[in-house]
Image (cartoon, rainbow, N blue to C red):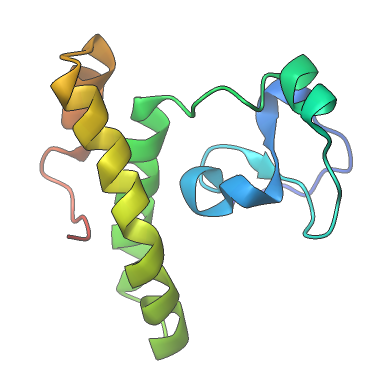
Length: 113
């Protein structure tokens, strides 16, 4: 969903395709089929969890997009949303500061449950 088209991005701005549902609103996503070995994931920090604030932003973006989506997208989203909320729940249970930021991001927004 980043609006601009670029061919080059910093590894800090990119996530592997496996993170598509978690990170597509905040990061560039490698194309499907691009193989990423564990060494590269470690070097680029892609084995680190996506920040809770980014997960919250993703949920908000899905809520906005769902208003204009088709049935297939809705079905895919219904399967993908649970891990996002698990991530938020884990942050809440850890009483992390990230969760407080996530709450502020989601407050008053249309989100998917």
